[in-house]
Length: 347
Image (cartoon, rainbow, N blue to C red; front, side, top):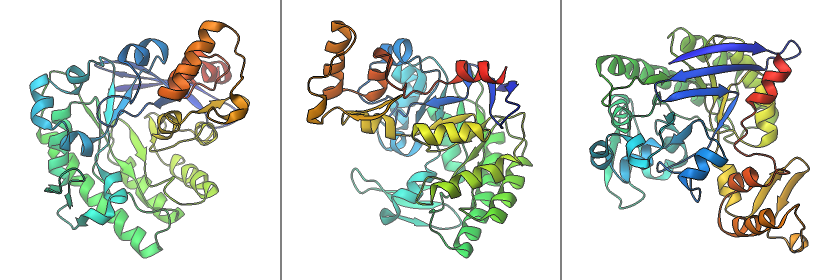
C-alpha cells in the first residue's frame, strides 16, 4: 500500500491524498461505509459501487469470525470473493468489541476471552490469533488488536490500557511479519493510538505508534463517551506527531460535523455505523440539517421529479440514508466522499 499526499490546505491541517492498494485506489479524505458482516445493510452491491461510489468498505473481525466463520470465508477465497466487492476493504481487529461487550469478556495479558453473543460459546482473541483471522478474511488494511479505552476512564486505567495496547501491538507486528497473505495480494497493518482524553498519554502513544513505520496509522478510543471538544483536542495532539506522509484513520467517527472537524485537523479516513443505522430509521443528513422522514410534517414533501420522489419514499421506509443521499441531490451524501471538494480547496 502507498499513500501520495497531493494537497494541503494553507489555512488548516486539511489534506487530500491518494491511497493505492492491490484492489484499487482511495481518494482521501474518505468515509468508509460499515459492512459489519461483509455487506452494508440494505444496500445492494450495485448501489454501493455505482450510486454511492464507495471506494472502500469496512468489515468487522469479531462478527465475521463468528458468522459466517473463517472456513466459509476461506473456501470462498477471502471476503472480496465472498461478498463480491472488488474494491479495497478494511477490517477492524475486535478491539471495539472488547470495549462494547464488556459484560461477556475477560481481559488479561494473553488476550481477551469472550462468549459469543450468538450461542454463548467461549473464544480467545490474542494478538497473534487476530492477525491470523484478519489474514484469512483478507482485507487490504488490517487493524492491530487493541483495547478501546472508555472515554470516561481515569488516568491510571487509561495508562495501563495504553501500555497493554502497545505490548499487543508488538506481538501483532511480529506475527504479521511472520505470516504471508493468503490470496495473492498485499495487506497492510495499521497500529492504533490510544490514551483516552489525557494529552500526555496520547502524545506518548502517538510517538510509539509513529516509531513503527506502518503504512498508515489509526486514532482509536474517541467518540466513546468523552466530550466532543476533548475529542477534537486529542486529534490535534496526535496529528502533530503522526507522520504526515502516511494516512490517518479516525476510528468510529461519525457525524457530518465530526468528520468535517476531523478533516480540518488532518484526518484522512473515517468510519461509523451511525449513517446506515440512522438511515434504516428514516433519518437523512442534508445540507440544511437533519430530516427525520418518519415525522408527519414530511408526509407531503415534494421532490424535484416524480421518479426521485417515488424512490425517496421507498427508501425512506425500507433502506438506508446513504442510498437516499446518492439518489436525491439535496441530501448530504453520507458516504462523505469529500475528496473532490478538498482537492479544490487545498489546490
